[in-house]
Length: 550
Image 1: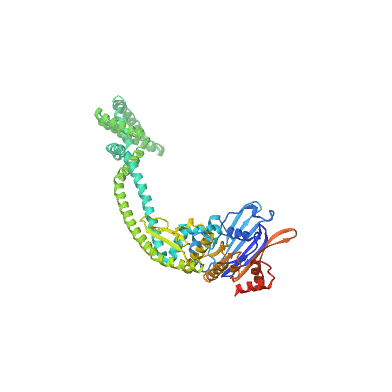
Image 2: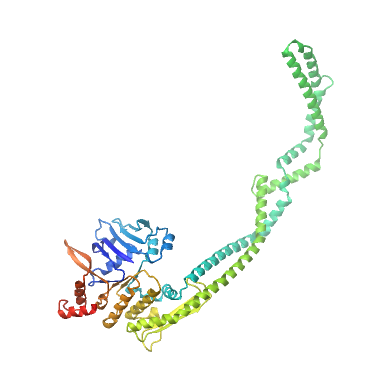
């Protein structure tokens, strides 16, 4: 419920604070006194867009603050969803700065306008003279039906199942598109994969292969140099081996003349042995080298294939080709695997859709079951509001087509006059009839569900006399279920509130200011007497007003 409202520097209001009662609160005032300003301030609290022209004094900021007791509204989940700290006593504040910027706060935490709108919808329901069109909207109709049908558990299950199907369908679309894309290139990619597989790239050491090619391409040249080197070492006339052997023998003779000569002898002895080993290796290598044109051709062909594949796939290494081969293998495999995955997904979706239909049917049956009760109650309350000839044609059909509400569609038709066939509510012309229908349906809704504070802006449009008195009694009864604020110009309704607030204009220091006052019992009698017309100070008017309060 709305506990209090403070308004500073807004339109004609300088500074106003008012506390509200838990049941029925009445607001009255002459035309132009500023009742719409109060509604405008409340609209800002629930997320309406701010307007710089609303500032009374452009040098100061406008501040509107509302204090709510939300203990009974079960909004903890919504607060969590909106990333807000839950507090049973919640304060919402709007500020319009002189610069034109607007700021919003929930319990002193800054919030975006969209967040405020989501929260505001759960705190205040402003029903203005133009809001009767909501009767024709699906949201309102389903809210009313579902409050009677008690389908909250089924609706949660339906929404989860519906979301599950949407996720599966999104996945299916992705796989189908992927399959289409892969199938377009499947043959070419399979050809590329086979080409790489036949090259047996994993068995190749490219460095060794290139070295082998280099060696086979230069066999004669290599053998020539090996032969020359070995002959130079082993030449009979005085080769390197013989010369080293002679030097070694000479140093052996002086090796006992000191450590220096002993070391030199040892080194020449090692050098002589190493030279003999080197000669042996050269001879062995020379003998093993043979020209092999066929093998060279095979190596050239293999290297040419590798270089061609590297150029084709725009890589500069054997590892790059192996990575491409692995990627192509996965894609070709995926093409074949996708059919099975798509088939499995289609089966999952079909099963989930059947389950969704069953939940949808259960919701539909529960809704359909409450239509007679709804019509009966609506007729009863409208008869109490002097609409004895009201007719309803409320129908619901199962469609098997999921929407935001389930798998059904409703059609609401209404007639207030005997002999007239029911028509869509949106086409019913009478403002008074729509006002009473709205009140009756809101009353039914309030009987079955905790509603936010309801603000009726002249719900009494088009009515007077005894009908207005009956509307006042129904508003008073509704105040037993929830907090109601009624802005009215009808004295019969004004007499029913637990609290009566008067909006009026007052000139202060040369400026017109809108004021808001809580009326005492005597002041209420005078206000109602004045609303009845004539001279409010006459005894007859006072008596008539007092009679309304009884």
